[in-house]
Length: 264
Image 1 (cartoon, rainbow, N blue to C red):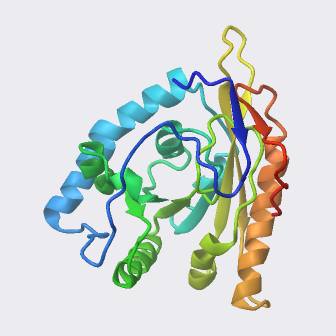
Image 2: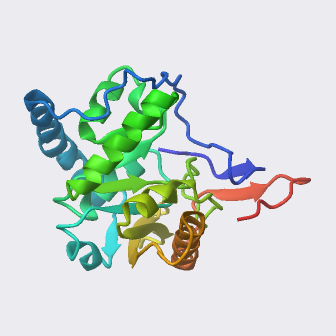
């Protein structure tokens, strides 16, 4: 449990406030992004359904007290692959809570190499759908191929465009449009979810209310670069509006003096 009450920041794009201390492995040409052998698929189903799902259920219902708004939007796309973008405000919860946004669809999450570098959990997260960002050109090719395959299989690729974890942060930080290259290239729908923190009746710790919005589509009348920016702006503006529903500040964030506001 995060016991910090105040966090001072200076760079909304690059500051990281996760408490985990992990030395990331290098994701090179030899990293296996797609594990679709018989035993690979068996391991995926076992770890996802038999182990991960009960843990995610307990956390979402009894720790985060999560409530999901507009879940029906994703149900309409159960036979379609798509991208799902969310705000990055929880160490453990951001791995667990999205599981119930679109179940039984499988989520493949683009993650930092830290998530596949832990001594024990790092061996399991790839079986749960973690797709670590690549470090070499060969790995990048495999990474893109894996994303394309999972979307074509009608799965969901989940992205935290803010990239860095700010626990319990109640606003949306500026993020680039780089990750919107994928839906533009594949011409598939985009959705977003915004985790907000709201007061609980008998606890100082807030509950999580998750709002789902979309679909947003690439505007094919624009150039690929402008399509990317257009998608990013739609998602960012929507998430900023939803974030206004947070009504409690569990951790207060204060900008250090002498630093300019980052531009979105």
